[in-house]
Amino acid sequence: MSHGLHTHAPHDDAVHHAAHADEHASEPTTKKHSLNQWVAIFTAILAALGAMVSYQGSNLMNEVLLYKNDAVLKKTKATDEWNYYQAVSTKSHLMEMALVLASPEKTADFKAKIAKYEAQKGEIKARANSLEKESTEANEEAARLNRPHHHLEIAMIFFQIAISLASITALTGRRWLFFLGLGSAAVGIGLWGLALSAMA
Image (tube, rainbow, N blue to C red; front, side, top):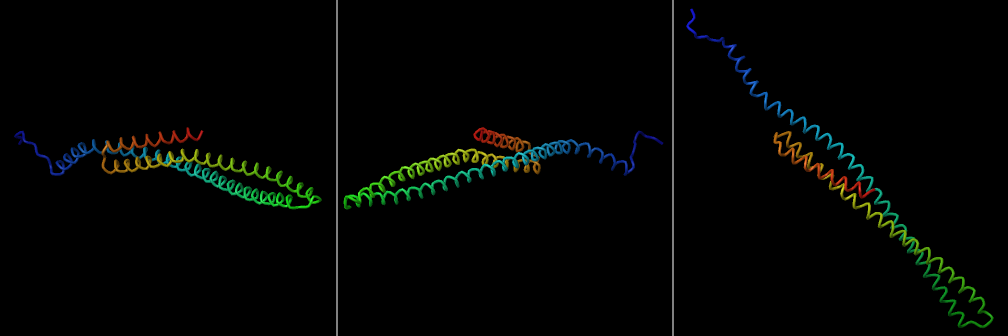
């Protein structure tokens, strides 16, 4: 006997409700999954870029330290040469005083020693000036390389901020955080480019 009223078994109702619930839930899940995929790809790319920037920064810092050490070493050698110059200069002055006080037969000896010390002073001064110049050049090169190293350090900070924002995006699903992370990564890449151009 049919009166136009159709009833479903309890199992059919449960299946029907579950199907509709799946349909409604599938849209946000798909979008979330898609966003999470982009976040994962973005994070992986940033990790690779960060590793390259970190390597370049470490390598550059080693070069800066080598030039700084070279500058200090050359400065120390220049100081040693100037000390030697002072010692020879003192000997030369002593010979000049001895020349004034010496008897005529001894003057030739003192004049020869004075000439020898004057020649030595010229050579020592030239070596000291050369070492001073090399020290200055090494310091300048260290300073030149330190500028791009500074850019690389800041680039790494922006990459780390971008990775943090991507992680928060994955947890919250907020797209604007992801775009903020993209902006931070773009700044990091720009600074990296500046560093590379300064190193060339």
